[in-house]
Image 1 (cartoon, rainbow, N blue to C red):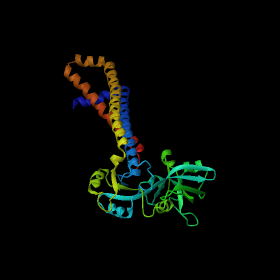
Image 2: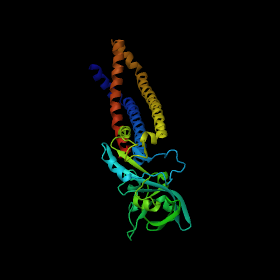
Image 3: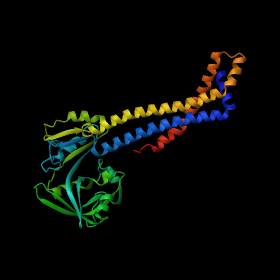
Image 4: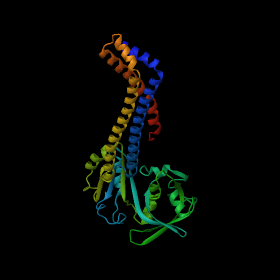
Length: 349
């Protein structure tokens, strides 16, 4: 106890050196916290965004992986209105959504753009990024005449030189193999933080997509959002694709859908381990240098303590105690500085 009291008094006497050591320790702790928290936040944000759009489970037509054309009109689920209620009633399922994707061309005057269309619903969970990014009009809203409209991104609107309320022609190849088009009004404009997401597709109501492609009562896939991603495997095992209503379908979990991305995340984890080790080593070097400078500057003081009878082990304990007190105080200060930074930059749910 006396060591702690003496160490504290010495820290007060040598204020400038003590403040330098405390600054080094607190800054090192804050940097370690910030780097680790930022990396973990980026990983979680990427993972959440990846699963938000794809869902945790996908019900697809059998043979989808082997198809040369992902928009083949024969690759459709024939009875989605039977499958969706069955999925929704299963334990752990938050939402099951029909998604009717198709390749098409958007025409506006002399401008055209080849793009993917997605038929979905207003309450979509998997495409909530587009719905929440609406800045003009509404998501899957109707025009002033009550006719169905489409929702496009700000980037697509700029490419085609159109604005809210302007007409857009959607040209497709329908289920009979014939070219077909319908003119829609732009009733919603959205913008997100991802250019790839914004310029990759546009949205319309699922029933309007069925009419456009002439595939009544059918869909391309069903995406399932679960309470916990870990439930995807057990749920997939429960579903019998050889029995109704799942006959003629195949099931993919998020691990199968995003296999390559998961490998990248594993490499990212390994990289962050080495990054953390490097950060700790740099921090330890800075702290050690600061403490050694303090010891070397006080060599005469330590010599005096030895001369008046302080044992070698007592001097050693005194130095360690002072370093311990400085370490604890600096670490607490680093936590006070680092935790608010981590919380501030933490991605919101």
